[in-house]
Length: 137
Image (tube, rainbow, N blue to C red):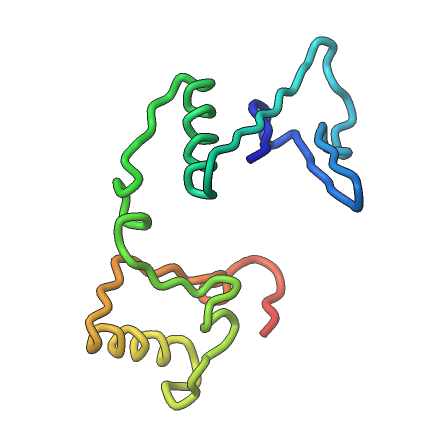
């Protein structure tokens, strides 16, 4: 894993054929004298172990402790998401369920309840609620 160690929102990484680069985003117009940015590279055997090792090093650097990853409902329970890539992202899916999301999603929940899938939370992407600007369907 290779990431910024500090100033995570100020960095940019790019790759190409035979090229890898990391540094300050091109949009940054000025850099104060003495400012520095550090990066960290971390590895271990296997993907999970590699990411956990990276997290351990980031926590050590920041002086923080790892929290219980199941402390909140999003991580502790199965969830139903309608965001990008989801079956119901800007799609009604099976039209026999209804002609709008207000008709479709309660039937989707009822079907999952009937087969024993206990969703602990639901996430509705931006198509479901009013937002500023034009909405394209």
